Amino acid sequence: MEEIFRQYPVYFIMAVAGTALYVMKLALFLLAGDGDGDFDAVENEVTDVAGSTFSLISIQSILAFFMGTGWVGLACLDEFGYSSGKTLIIASVFGFLMMLLSSFLTFKIKGLNHTPKLDYKKAIGVKGRAYTNVPEKGEGVGQVEVTFGGKMQILQAVSVDGLIKSFTPIEVVEIDDSGNAQVKKS
Image 1 (cartoon, rainbow, N blue to C red):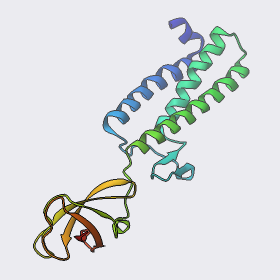
Image 2 (cartoon, one colour):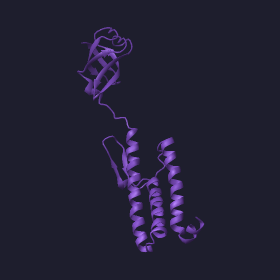
Image 3 (cartoon, helix red, strand yellow):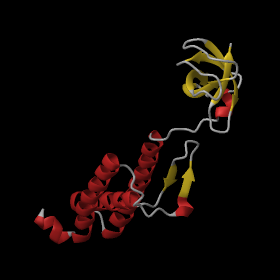
Image 4 (cartoon, rainbow, N blue to C red):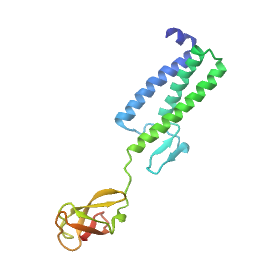
């Protein structure tokens, strides 16, 4: 190990330091979430439908570049005996591929955490059932269970025509400004 360090110090430092820092950063990301500590380049961002942002330039991807470049550089020089120029090209290309892979995986991991916002106005006209007693308007709030947007949702609700007992079939008439569903017996 010491001999490799003396022969190829740049690649050795890139490999060892890049790997150690990458693993620490990845562990912090997975345990604590994205602390918005990355210095992402805004011009490289792409946002998907779920709202996750893909950024090629981040601390994580730069560490992946150094890690990949260092290890492949060491392998090319020490194991395969390639020239310095050939090693630099191969190691840089591999480092860039590691950078892309790291950015892509981070992008996908962030996408797992996303909860899409529902347009509650799409619940108007949908039939469901009272989940709890739904009091008359002005006397409190109950809950109803309706399916819209591909998911079953439990909404806060008030009745437009008197008390509705639990498990009674209902229909959503309107969504008021506070987000409560106004419902009637179905």
